Amino acid sequence: MSKMLPALAALALAATFSVAHAQHSDKETKEDVQRHRAMAAAHEAAARCLESGKKEDVCMKELQASCKGLAVGKYCGMKHAH
Image (cartoon, rainbow, N blue to C red):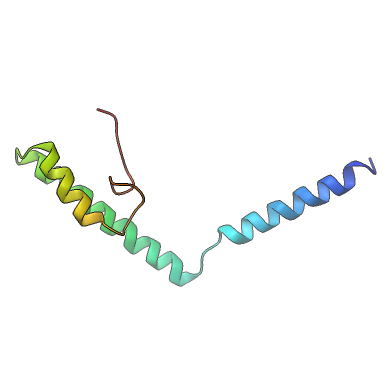
């Protein structure tokens, strides 16, 4: 048991650090909310674009332009299978 104690202590410390690191300040949370709403609006616009009959490449270019700087990847944080 005494050999496991340091390993358990290290694991507990790592878990504590992970939880503390994952928590956001109120300002960061508000910024995340704004970013998610902006991404949702961009995706809604892309859906309307596709519904209007425009070609997918045109709508994806519009989506990329709307999402520049908002999310990771060229699909505004989302990509689905085709």
